[in-house]
Amino acid sequence: MIRFLTAGESHGQALVGILEGMPAGLEIEASYINHQLKRRQQGYGRGGRMKIERDEVRILSGIRYGKTLGSPIALMIENRDWKNWLEIMAVEGERPGHIGHVSIVRPGHADYSATAKYRYDDVRNAIERASARETAMRVALCTIIRKFLEDVGIYIGSHVLRIGSASYKTRKDIDAKIKAWTQASCGAYKVTEEADTSEVRIISPNVSKRAIEAIKKVKKEGNTLGGVFEVLITGAPVGLGSHVHYDRKIEALLSQAIMSIPAVKAVEIGDGIENAGKPGSRVHDEIFPGRGGKINRKTNRSGGIEGGITVGENIVVRGFMKPIATLMRPLHTVDVKTGEAVDARRERSDFCAVPACSVIGEAVVAPVLMNAFLEKFGGDSVEEIRERYKNRQE
Image (cartoon, rainbow, N blue to C red; front, side, top):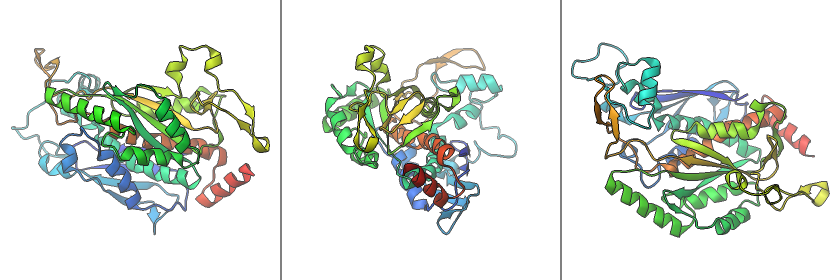
Protein backbone atom coordinates (compact mmCIF):
# COMPACT_ATOMS: atom_id res chain seq x y z
CA MET A 1 0.00 0.00 0.00
CA ILE A 2 1.23 3.48 -0.91
CA ARG A 3 1.10 6.18 1.71
CA PHE A 4 2.94 9.43 2.21
CA LEU A 5 3.43 12.29 4.64
CA THR A 6 4.43 15.88 4.03
CA ALA A 7 5.83 18.40 6.51
CA GLY A 8 6.91 22.00 6.36
CA GLU A 9 5.54 25.52 6.59
CA SER A 10 5.00 27.95 3.74
CA HIS A 11 7.89 30.21 4.84
CA GLY A 12 9.90 27.62 6.75
CA GLN A 13 13.25 26.18 5.75
CA ALA A 14 11.91 23.49 3.44
CA LEU A 15 9.13 21.11 2.54
CA VAL A 16 9.90 17.47 3.23
CA GLY A 17 8.05 14.28 2.42
CA ILE A 18 8.25 10.52 2.87
CA LEU A 19 6.74 8.03 0.42
CA GLU A 20 6.27 4.46 1.66
CA GLY A 21 5.28 1.36 -0.26
CA MET A 22 6.87 2.07 -3.64
CA PRO A 23 7.99 -1.24 -5.21
CA ALA A 24 11.64 -1.79 -6.02
CA GLY A 25 13.05 -1.28 -9.49
CA LEU A 26 11.18 1.81 -10.69
CA GLU A 27 13.40 4.07 -12.76
CA ILE A 28 13.08 7.70 -11.63
CA GLU A 29 15.21 10.83 -11.82
CA ALA A 30 14.97 14.20 -10.11
CA SER A 31 14.56 15.88 -13.51
CA TYR A 32 11.28 14.02 -14.07
CA ILE A 33 9.94 15.27 -10.74
CA ASN A 34 11.22 18.81 -11.35
CA HIS A 35 9.32 19.00 -14.63
CA GLN A 36 6.04 18.49 -12.77
CA LEU A 37 7.07 20.97 -10.07
CA LYS A 38 7.69 23.57 -12.75
CA ARG A 39 4.27 22.92 -14.30
CA ARG A 40 2.67 23.52 -10.91
CA GLN A 41 4.26 26.98 -10.73
CA GLN A 42 2.99 28.10 -14.12
CA GLY A 43 -0.22 29.88 -15.11
CA TYR A 44 -1.42 33.40 -15.71
CA GLY A 45 -2.61 35.00 -12.49
CA ARG A 46 0.02 33.58 -10.12
CA GLY A 47 1.45 35.85 -7.42
CA GLY A 48 4.89 37.14 -6.51
CA ARG A 49 5.96 33.98 -4.64
CA MET A 50 6.41 32.20 -7.96
CA LYS A 51 9.07 34.76 -8.92
CA ILE A 52 11.10 33.77 -5.87
CA GLU A 53 10.76 30.00 -5.73
CA ARG A 54 12.28 27.74 -8.37
CA ASP A 55 11.17 24.43 -6.98
CA GLU A 56 13.69 21.64 -7.33
CA VAL A 57 13.63 18.38 -5.43
CA ARG A 58 16.46 16.72 -3.51
CA ILE A 59 16.16 12.95 -3.24
CA LEU A 60 17.49 11.97 0.18
CA SER A 61 16.79 8.24 0.37
CA GLY A 62 15.05 5.24 -1.15
CA ILE A 63 16.62 5.53 -4.62
CA ARG A 64 20.02 4.21 -5.75
CA TYR A 65 21.51 4.65 -9.22
CA GLY A 66 18.18 5.90 -10.52
CA LYS A 67 16.01 3.03 -9.27
CA THR A 68 13.74 2.69 -6.25
CA LEU A 69 14.90 0.28 -3.53
CA GLY A 70 11.52 -0.64 -2.07
CA SER A 71 12.39 1.32 1.09
CA PRO A 72 10.84 4.67 2.11
CA ILE A 73 11.70 7.54 -0.24
CA ALA A 74 12.52 10.89 1.35
CA LEU A 75 12.38 14.14 -0.61
CA MET A 76 13.11 17.79 0.21
CA ILE A 77 12.29 21.07 -1.53
CA GLU A 78 14.06 24.10 -0.10
CA ASN A 79 12.13 27.35 0.34
CA ARG A 80 14.27 30.09 -1.15
CA ASP A 81 12.15 32.71 0.61
CA TRP A 82 13.23 31.29 3.99
CA LYS A 83 16.10 33.79 4.20
CA ASN A 84 13.52 36.60 4.43
CA TRP A 85 11.65 34.87 7.28
CA LEU A 86 14.48 33.72 9.53
CA GLU A 87 13.23 35.57 12.62
CA ILE A 88 9.50 35.22 11.98
CA MET A 89 9.71 31.45 11.42
CA ALA A 90 12.60 30.57 13.75
CA VAL A 91 12.39 27.00 15.04
CA GLU A 92 14.09 27.64 18.40
CA GLY A 93 14.68 30.48 20.83
CA GLU A 94 12.49 33.26 22.20
CA ARG A 95 10.28 35.38 20.00
CA PRO A 96 11.95 38.76 19.36
CA GLY A 97 10.01 41.71 20.74
CA HIS A 98 9.58 43.31 17.34
CA ILE A 99 7.86 40.21 15.87
CA GLY A 100 4.18 40.81 16.52
CA HIS A 101 1.33 38.33 16.89
CA VAL A 102 -1.13 38.06 14.00
CA SER A 103 -4.67 38.28 15.34
CA ILE A 104 -6.72 39.32 12.30
CA VAL A 105 -8.33 36.34 10.59
CA ARG A 106 -9.12 36.21 6.86
CA PRO A 107 -12.54 34.95 5.66
CA GLY A 108 -12.31 31.83 3.51
CA HIS A 109 -9.01 30.64 5.00
CA ALA A 110 -8.19 28.27 7.86
CA ASP A 111 -7.16 31.30 9.96
CA TYR A 112 -10.13 31.35 12.34
CA SER A 113 -11.04 27.66 12.45
CA ALA A 114 -7.47 26.43 13.01
CA THR A 115 -6.72 29.16 15.57
CA ALA A 116 -9.84 28.24 17.53
CA LYS A 117 -9.19 24.49 17.28
CA TYR A 118 -5.54 24.57 18.38
CA ARG A 119 -5.81 27.62 20.65
CA TYR A 120 -3.02 29.42 18.86
CA ASP A 121 -2.01 32.81 20.22
CA ASP A 122 -0.74 33.74 16.74
CA VAL A 123 -2.75 33.21 13.54
CA ARG A 124 0.58 32.86 11.71
CA ASN A 125 0.68 29.26 13.02
CA ALA A 126 -2.46 28.49 10.99
CA ILE A 127 -1.47 30.49 7.92
CA GLU A 128 1.81 28.66 7.39
CA ARG A 129 0.67 25.04 7.27
CA ALA A 130 -2.70 25.73 5.61
CA SER A 131 -0.94 27.41 2.69
CA ALA A 132 -1.15 25.76 -0.73
CA ARG A 133 2.65 25.82 -0.67
CA GLU A 134 2.36 22.31 0.85
CA THR A 135 1.09 21.00 -2.49
CA ALA A 136 4.57 21.38 -4.00
CA MET A 137 5.73 18.40 -1.94
CA ARG A 138 2.58 16.46 -2.73
CA VAL A 139 3.24 16.95 -6.44
CA ALA A 140 6.84 15.77 -5.96
CA LEU A 141 5.86 12.59 -4.08
CA CYS A 142 2.94 11.78 -6.35
CA THR A 143 5.09 12.22 -9.45
CA ILE A 144 7.05 9.12 -8.42
CA ILE A 145 3.74 7.27 -8.19
CA ARG A 146 2.72 8.73 -11.56
CA LYS A 147 5.88 7.26 -13.10
CA PHE A 148 4.91 3.79 -11.87
CA LEU A 149 1.44 4.16 -13.40
CA GLU A 150 2.91 5.19 -16.73
CA ASP A 151 5.13 2.10 -16.67
CA VAL A 152 2.01 -0.08 -16.56
CA GLY A 153 0.17 1.98 -19.19
CA ILE A 154 -1.97 4.31 -17.06
CA TYR A 155 -1.65 8.01 -17.95
CA ILE A 156 -2.98 11.11 -16.22
CA GLY A 157 -3.66 14.51 -17.77
CA SER A 158 -5.78 17.59 -17.19
CA HIS A 159 -7.08 20.82 -18.64
CA VAL A 160 -9.08 23.81 -17.43
CA LEU A 161 -12.74 24.10 -18.39
CA ARG A 162 -13.63 27.45 -16.86
CA ILE A 163 -12.12 30.47 -15.15
CA GLY A 164 -14.69 32.84 -13.72
CA SER A 165 -17.34 33.31 -16.41
CA ALA A 166 -14.95 32.38 -19.24
CA SER A 167 -16.00 28.91 -20.32
CA TYR A 168 -17.07 26.82 -23.28
CA LYS A 169 -20.55 27.71 -24.53
CA THR A 170 -21.01 24.04 -25.37
CA ARG A 171 -18.86 21.02 -24.47
CA LYS A 172 -19.53 19.38 -27.83
CA ASP A 173 -16.43 20.60 -29.68
CA ILE A 174 -13.95 20.13 -26.85
CA ASP A 175 -15.41 16.71 -25.97
CA ALA A 176 -14.97 15.59 -29.58
CA LYS A 177 -11.30 16.65 -29.52
CA ILE A 178 -10.63 14.95 -26.21
CA LYS A 179 -12.36 11.75 -27.32
CA ALA A 180 -10.14 11.62 -30.42
CA TRP A 181 -6.98 12.31 -28.38
CA THR A 182 -7.76 9.74 -25.71
CA GLN A 183 -8.34 6.76 -28.00
CA ALA A 184 -4.81 5.60 -27.18
CA SER A 185 -3.93 4.58 -23.61
CA CYS A 186 -1.47 7.47 -23.34
CA GLY A 187 -4.07 9.92 -24.66
CA ALA A 188 -4.29 11.82 -21.37
CA TYR A 189 -0.77 13.10 -22.11
CA LYS A 190 -1.98 14.59 -25.39
CA VAL A 191 -4.62 16.56 -23.51
CA THR A 192 -2.04 17.83 -21.01
CA GLU A 193 0.42 18.78 -23.75
CA GLU A 194 -2.24 20.79 -25.55
CA ALA A 195 -3.37 22.45 -22.30
CA ASP A 196 0.21 23.38 -21.38
CA THR A 197 0.49 25.53 -24.52
CA SER A 198 -2.03 27.94 -22.94
CA GLU A 199 -1.16 30.28 -20.06
CA VAL A 200 -4.40 29.26 -18.38
CA ARG A 201 -4.35 25.60 -19.55
CA ILE A 202 -7.54 26.05 -21.60
CA ILE A 203 -7.39 24.18 -24.91
CA SER A 204 -9.59 26.60 -26.88
CA PRO A 205 -7.66 29.77 -27.88
CA ASN A 206 -10.85 31.85 -27.74
CA VAL A 207 -11.84 30.69 -24.25
CA SER A 208 -8.23 31.04 -23.13
CA LYS A 209 -8.15 34.65 -24.31
CA ARG A 210 -11.39 35.46 -22.48
CA ALA A 211 -10.05 33.85 -19.29
CA ILE A 212 -6.86 35.95 -19.38
CA GLU A 213 -8.92 39.11 -19.89
CA ALA A 214 -11.10 38.13 -16.92
CA ILE A 215 -8.02 37.66 -14.72
CA LYS A 216 -6.61 41.02 -15.83
CA LYS A 217 -9.89 42.65 -14.84
CA VAL A 218 -9.99 41.18 -11.32
CA LYS A 219 -6.32 42.05 -10.78
CA LYS A 220 -7.17 45.72 -11.36
CA GLU A 221 -10.11 45.37 -8.97
CA GLY A 222 -8.01 43.66 -6.28
CA ASN A 223 -10.21 40.59 -6.63
CA THR A 224 -9.71 36.88 -7.43
CA LEU A 225 -11.22 34.17 -9.64
CA GLY A 226 -11.88 30.44 -9.34
CA GLY A 227 -12.93 27.91 -11.93
CA VAL A 228 -13.26 24.30 -13.01
CA PHE A 229 -10.62 21.80 -14.13
CA GLU A 230 -10.88 18.28 -15.49
CA VAL A 231 -8.53 15.39 -14.73
CA LEU A 232 -8.47 12.56 -17.29
CA ILE A 233 -7.06 9.06 -16.73
CA THR A 234 -6.52 6.78 -19.71
CA GLY A 235 -5.40 3.16 -19.75
CA ALA A 236 -6.94 2.15 -16.41
CA PRO A 237 -8.07 -1.51 -16.58
CA VAL A 238 -11.43 -2.91 -15.58
CA GLY A 239 -11.73 -3.79 -11.90
CA LEU A 240 -9.92 -1.12 -9.88
CA GLY A 241 -11.81 -0.28 -6.70
CA SER A 242 -14.63 -2.24 -5.11
CA HIS A 243 -18.38 -2.27 -4.62
CA VAL A 244 -18.27 -4.24 -1.36
CA HIS A 245 -17.13 -1.52 1.08
CA TYR A 246 -17.91 2.20 1.08
CA ASP A 247 -14.27 3.14 1.75
CA ARG A 248 -12.97 1.18 -1.25
CA LYS A 249 -15.22 2.73 -3.90
CA ILE A 250 -12.80 4.36 -6.28
CA GLU A 251 -14.93 7.41 -7.08
CA ALA A 252 -15.15 8.15 -3.34
CA LEU A 253 -11.37 7.93 -3.01
CA LEU A 254 -10.78 10.07 -6.10
CA SER A 255 -13.24 12.65 -4.79
CA GLN A 256 -11.45 12.82 -1.44
CA ALA A 257 -8.12 13.30 -3.20
CA ILE A 258 -9.40 16.21 -5.29
CA MET A 259 -11.20 17.76 -2.32
CA SER A 260 -7.96 17.68 -0.33
CA ILE A 261 -6.52 20.39 -2.60
CA PRO A 262 -6.82 23.84 -0.99
CA ALA A 263 -9.78 25.90 -2.31
CA VAL A 264 -11.51 22.97 -4.05
CA LYS A 265 -15.12 22.91 -2.84
CA ALA A 266 -16.84 20.42 -5.15
CA VAL A 267 -16.08 17.35 -7.28
CA GLU A 268 -17.85 15.74 -10.22
CA ILE A 269 -17.31 12.25 -11.62
CA GLY A 270 -18.21 12.01 -15.31
CA ASP A 271 -21.37 13.97 -16.08
CA GLY A 272 -22.67 13.56 -12.53
CA ILE A 273 -24.05 17.07 -12.08
CA GLU A 274 -25.79 17.24 -15.44
CA ASN A 275 -27.04 13.66 -15.12
CA ALA A 276 -28.94 14.53 -11.94
CA GLY A 277 -31.49 16.41 -14.06
CA LYS A 278 -31.97 13.81 -16.80
CA PRO A 279 -34.02 10.61 -17.13
CA GLY A 280 -32.10 7.36 -16.77
CA SER A 281 -32.43 6.52 -20.47
CA ARG A 282 -30.17 9.51 -21.24
CA VAL A 283 -27.70 8.89 -18.41
CA HIS A 284 -26.53 5.27 -18.27
CA ASP A 285 -23.89 4.01 -20.70
CA GLU A 286 -25.39 1.20 -22.79
CA ILE A 287 -23.30 -1.94 -23.33
CA PHE A 288 -22.78 -3.57 -26.72
CA PRO A 289 -20.83 -6.63 -27.96
CA GLY A 290 -17.26 -5.81 -28.97
CA ARG A 291 -14.38 -7.58 -30.65
CA GLY A 292 -12.80 -10.67 -29.12
CA GLY A 293 -15.53 -11.14 -26.55
CA LYS A 294 -14.98 -7.70 -25.07
CA ILE A 295 -17.78 -5.22 -24.49
CA ASN A 296 -18.18 -1.82 -26.11
CA ARG A 297 -19.77 1.45 -25.01
CA LYS A 298 -20.66 4.41 -27.21
CA THR A 299 -20.86 6.86 -24.30
CA ASN A 300 -18.96 7.49 -21.06
CA ARG A 301 -21.35 9.59 -19.00
CA SER A 302 -20.37 7.64 -15.87
CA GLY A 303 -16.80 8.91 -16.09
CA GLY A 304 -15.36 5.42 -16.36
CA ILE A 305 -16.70 4.15 -13.02
CA GLU A 306 -19.76 2.07 -12.14
CA GLY A 307 -20.55 0.71 -8.70
CA GLY A 308 -17.28 1.99 -7.27
CA ILE A 309 -15.22 0.03 -9.85
CA THR A 310 -13.44 1.13 -13.03
CA VAL A 311 -15.04 -0.19 -16.24
CA GLY A 312 -12.07 0.22 -18.60
CA GLU A 313 -13.20 3.54 -20.07
CA ASN A 314 -11.46 6.88 -19.54
CA ILE A 315 -11.84 8.12 -15.96
CA VAL A 316 -13.10 11.70 -15.80
CA VAL A 317 -12.94 13.76 -12.59
CA ARG A 318 -13.71 17.48 -12.33
CA GLY A 319 -12.72 19.82 -9.52
CA PHE A 320 -14.44 23.11 -8.72
CA MET A 321 -12.10 25.66 -7.20
CA LYS A 322 -13.37 28.69 -5.32
CA PRO A 323 -11.65 32.07 -5.82
CA ILE A 324 -8.49 32.60 -3.75
CA ALA A 325 -9.57 33.91 -0.32
CA THR A 326 -6.87 36.60 0.06
CA LEU A 327 -8.07 39.79 -1.64
CA MET A 328 -6.12 42.98 -2.28
CA ARG A 329 -9.32 44.83 -1.34
CA PRO A 330 -9.95 43.02 1.93
CA LEU A 331 -13.27 41.70 3.20
CA HIS A 332 -14.73 42.46 6.62
CA THR A 333 -13.53 40.36 9.52
CA VAL A 334 -12.66 40.45 13.24
CA ASP A 335 -9.49 40.88 15.25
CA VAL A 336 -9.75 37.81 17.49
CA LYS A 337 -7.57 39.43 20.16
CA THR A 338 -9.67 42.58 20.59
CA GLY A 339 -13.01 41.44 19.18
CA GLU A 340 -13.15 44.56 16.99
CA ALA A 341 -14.43 44.69 13.43
CA VAL A 342 -11.53 45.25 11.00
CA ASP A 343 -10.51 44.68 7.40
CA ALA A 344 -8.88 41.32 6.65
CA ARG A 345 -5.10 41.05 6.44
CA ARG A 346 -3.38 40.80 3.08
CA GLU A 347 -0.92 37.96 2.63
CA ARG A 348 1.04 37.52 -0.60
CA SER A 349 -1.20 35.46 -2.85
CA ASP A 350 -2.42 34.64 -6.36
CA PHE A 351 -5.22 36.24 -8.34
CA CYS A 352 -6.11 32.94 -10.02
CA ALA A 353 -4.57 29.52 -9.42
CA VAL A 354 -6.93 27.26 -11.38
CA PRO A 355 -4.23 26.25 -13.92
CA ALA A 356 -1.90 25.22 -11.08
CA CYS A 357 -4.77 23.44 -9.33
CA SER A 358 -5.35 21.28 -12.41
CA VAL A 359 -1.71 20.14 -12.30
CA ILE A 360 -2.04 19.35 -8.60
CA GLY A 361 -5.19 17.41 -9.46
CA GLU A 362 -3.17 15.21 -11.81
CA ALA A 363 -0.80 14.44 -8.96
CA VAL A 364 -3.21 13.68 -6.11
CA VAL A 365 -5.24 11.07 -8.00
CA ALA A 366 -2.11 8.98 -8.62
CA PRO A 367 -1.94 7.34 -5.13
CA VAL A 368 -5.62 6.37 -5.37
CA LEU A 369 -5.04 4.62 -8.69
CA MET A 370 -1.82 2.96 -7.59
CA ASN A 371 -3.27 1.58 -4.36
CA ALA A 372 -6.23 0.13 -6.27
CA PHE A 373 -3.82 -1.31 -8.84
CA LEU A 374 -1.54 -2.84 -6.19
CA GLU A 375 -4.53 -4.34 -4.42
CA LYS A 376 -5.36 -6.24 -7.60
CA PHE A 377 -1.95 -6.91 -9.16
CA GLY A 378 0.49 -6.26 -6.31
CA GLY A 379 4.06 -7.38 -5.73
CA ASP A 380 7.32 -6.19 -4.22
CA SER A 381 9.10 -5.16 -7.41
CA VAL A 382 8.05 -3.42 -10.60
CA GLU A 383 9.16 -6.47 -12.58
CA GLU A 384 6.96 -8.81 -10.53
CA ILE A 385 3.95 -6.50 -10.81
CA ARG A 386 4.35 -6.21 -14.58
CA GLU A 387 4.40 -10.01 -14.88
CA ARG A 388 1.25 -10.39 -12.80
CA TYR A 389 -0.54 -7.66 -14.73
CA LYS A 390 0.46 -9.19 -18.06
CA ASN A 391 -0.75 -12.65 -16.97
CA ARG A 392 -4.12 -11.23 -15.88
CA GLN A 393 -4.57 -9.55 -19.27
CA GLU A 394 -3.81 -12.68 -21.29
